[in-house]
Length: 75
Image (cartoon, rainbow, N blue to C red; front, side, top):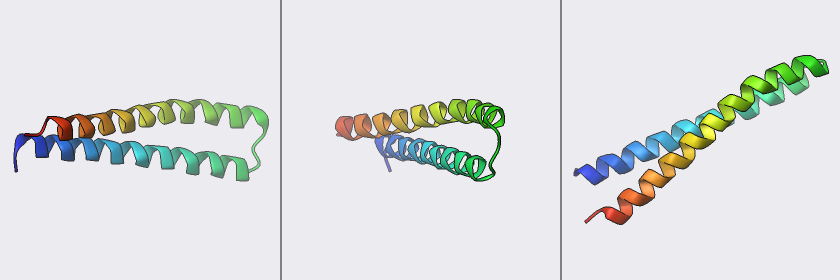
């Protein structure tokens, strides 16, 4: 297994980690909405979820970019 194969697998792992974070965000917001929390509590929960969501989305995008670039550069 060459260097580019390792880079591809690392990018795929980063993408999977980002996807897990996005699913966590979806589940957290769904649970908060079903709990029937008031508007302020829901807004406070959404602030933390928003930060995690942006990080997870960035990790997923960077991972996909790493995979595509490694595939294009692989000899």
